[in-house]
Length: 300
Image 1: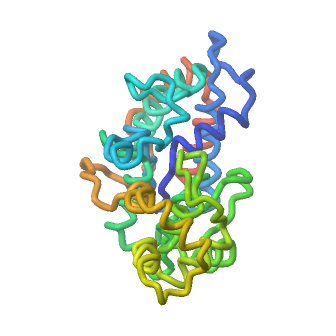
Image 2: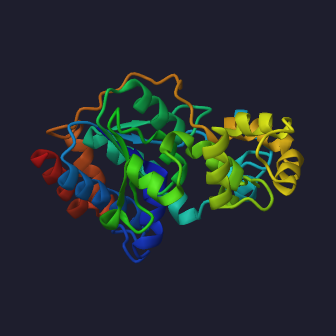
């Protein structure tokens, strides 16, 4: 199964494909075409039998904000409506992307109150594998599990140059296994998500602490144990961050229990709504990208 972190991919497409790629009426469709080309390439290269495009029905869920108000707060466009800062030219393309996925017959799932990460976490928890998760988000490294065949195709350098992240790759890069990545990220912090981390704790120290104490809960227990192997400086820094550490792991950890709607993740041999797909292709001038996807689907 191929699971797409769809927003991660269409943001990459929007910034990687020129805005001069437009529909016949001049409307930019660079994110639409870029995403479709990504899908065509991934299906061709990976030959999945199943695929789900996972969506952010809620990019900043209330349950995470209640635990940690700084969560993604710097990306708010409007605090009153919880709206995200999205370039208007990209925002206008998101409904088109969903229409096209529906017409193709590609499963796409977003669940109110949850992020795409949580949908992905739930799908991987329920699936017997193998599963490849396509994302530019390091947080999903926590799902990597060789026993279940869950890997991350990490697109930080581009979809065509993605890194295959299995347990060995995650451990080589961060000195912790995937299952420990959420605690590692909690300690190190992540400014892009509004996670402050523990002051003065970077990747190396975070990995050492997780390796030594197992997880954040074990580390907090060690702070209260005078015999624990912690320097006075580290003990003080962790104690000062106790309130943050008490809640942050629940913010960083993706949910495995999202109530998913009914869906069919089988790769379609033919479009679900061929007439509608023709209309969309003509309306938005995306015939060439649609044909690449259809060719990839037939060859998978």
